[in-house]
Image (cartoon, rainbow, N blue to C red; front, side):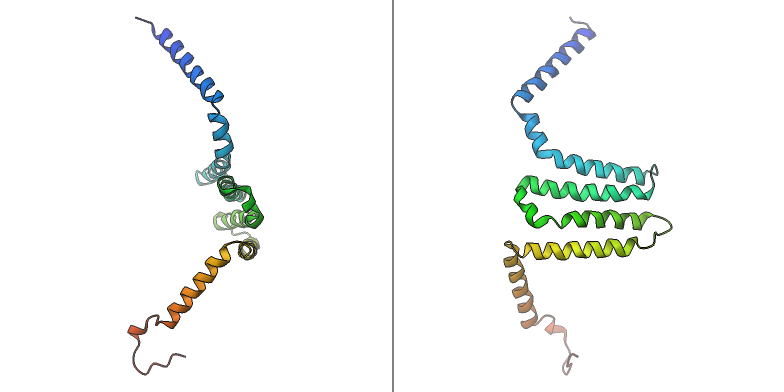
Length: 169
């Protein structure tokens, strides 16, 4: 029978051996290369937790929102290739807009000028994102959506509920 200290020492040695083995097999390198954007998202969420637990002012939501959006952007690029950054770059502006909007929502009294700034920057980023996506395969998706929408209007959107003699405008 071994004592408790022998069991603890044995457990420590086994864990150390597993860590060394996994490190030599490249598991930690793979996780580091793959999951690092998640660390950015987690930091952003922890910043949000600081505010919502009452330990920080609403101003911390600006970097918190930015980090969450950027972490998601980096995660998408990390999974599907960094070439996507050539048309997803407007998301950087969207991150700033999200952070500013969160600040506006939760700050009391409401700061002047922050809401228009956040909305205009968010709109600009979405318009830029739309135009950059037009240079990719997204143009085909847009074309199909427009065709479906047009057919929906042509083929009688809501005709069953119309009264006779209703002329529209």
